[in-house]
Image (cartoon, helix red, strand yellow):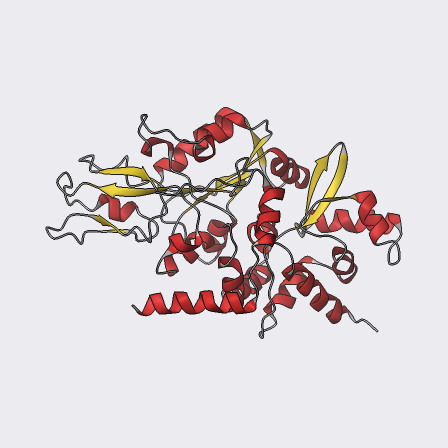
Length: 378
């Protein structure tokens, strides 16, 4: 007989086979987290979903031995309402899919996350197994693009690396959401050091339609999106969209609150695990040694360590956000293209397919962890 606890373990194993894994932990934090998100029957139905969207009719057929059509429809709606699964409309029909924990189920709790959920999420996400699974994803789930004011006009920049081109080319709708990372920190009495605004995360297209359906957002116009992005840049936030040519979400991250940048800061060479086509370059002759670039950097990639106290860039840490460029009083900093350009997959489904094709097993993941550990000791 399959018990409820067995169902959650089977669901954990099922989610771990998807593009972004959901590994088991010895502490049981993985199962506690799933119990926040899925009732027992919901967990059972979720086993019939994958990271690739499937229509309601397809899921009803898959689950026919366990659930009636009415039960399936009701459970899909309840899971979606709780932010446990994703939804999109394709060819006029509802399609459903499992979400990764990050970016996905965790961010979908942005409306009113409970302290209990946040504590269990924190306990799970700080485990070595989750960190290893998350960081060994190739290509990375997200990437960094430069802020608009950091790229000289003479640069030829692909549209997928231009934030305003991404907004311009999207058919909409557009929504702004509260950042769950900043909200979580604020709940602990640690407000963001970069901005007092919570509404900094953006979604476009299908993802915007999904969060509009859940009513956990505010719909905005294209011009309002551009205004929000301009303020995000002024506040010193790092632009991190989905790693696709047609991204449907864009996070604006800070090093003090955001989980993604926290992971990057903790690594000796963040760029080994991230996607970015740019890096900063500093002219030692022009540098005034003021330290503004170092204070603006969110991943500790810039320091006043030159022979004469000038700023220097650690290229293995620089993620090419461009925040250091427009605020340099002497114009000593510029962004340059990395030698090898990374062209993102077309869309979320293509990214999912590519990640699954490159998915690493436990031995390969362990090798990656050992490699990082050795670099940290150097």
